[in-house]
Image (cartoon, rainbow, N blue to C red; front, side, top):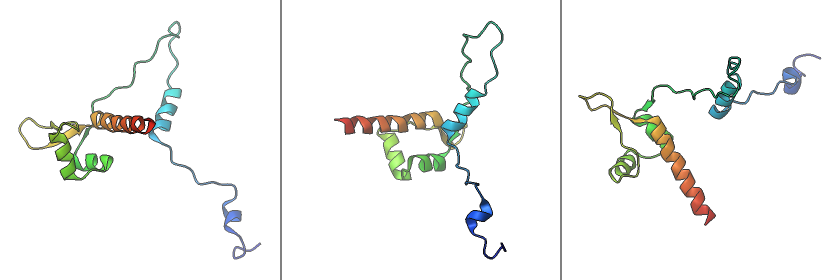
Length: 118
């Protein structure tokens, strides 16, 4: 068979495009590959992996939440969104703790689901 008559399926064979993994899948895989516990400590749980808190600047918060800048600042002033922290004691640079923003989004999802259940 010459290349001109070869179909796309024949050229790539059984190869399927690889699906991108979600963060949850990557973390679950990482937990599965955790090193074995030392002998005699089989019932012991590994402490959760904790690192320094991640700080998100304004463009990231806007991208993650889908909010406009004015809506974000209004929600903060009304106490409906986590307040930013000053990155430096003397400066205007601010950021949000990523875990607080994620927690806020998760609370909004729970509120939506509870509202739909009523």
